Length: 217
Image 1 (cartoon, rainbow, N blue to C red):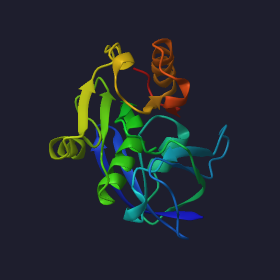
Image 2 (image 1 turned 120 degrees about the vertical axis):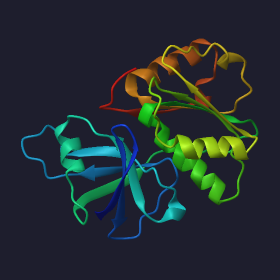
Image 3 (image 1 turned 60 degrees about the vertical axis):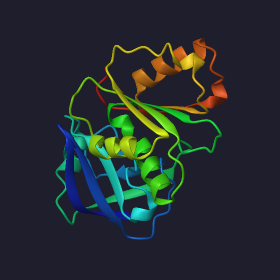
Image 4 (image 1 turned 30 degrees about the horizontal axis):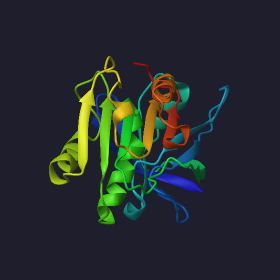
């Protein structure tokens, strides 16, 4: 299907959300991703996968990403309003699993996007936002913080903590969480996953979503 760029919105320093309409009705579950393809010559890959940062009820596909020096990213950000990209393969199992216990969400930088989509979806459906979100970033200006703070204030079952890269997860082993979700740069995701497994967290309770092409911290 084709996606037509409708608007762009800056979320934080160097981070933007791009909003697209689809040429055919798109069906997805909050937290899933989509593959975008651009006609880039002399490039090792002309496609990249992005988490959809809008919830299904919004009926518009958005991706939230950081502008980098990669040719793909520069070509994507150079797209003018009304311009199109090819899209396919909406998929992924990094979605909200029902659990009696609260989830633990661990987001590194732009890895916040699937959690943001899940929480929007849950609020729209009037379902519990029973989760603890650890948002890892050394930066003070973070994507979606205003909305995340609103949820933190409005829903007692949702807890938000912004932590820096030096924070350890020594308290995780004793947590009463259900599933533990980790999303962010690949190295960060693998490091946190290894630590959790070393602490005795059962592997089937740990769900990961690795973002490639982003700075490590």
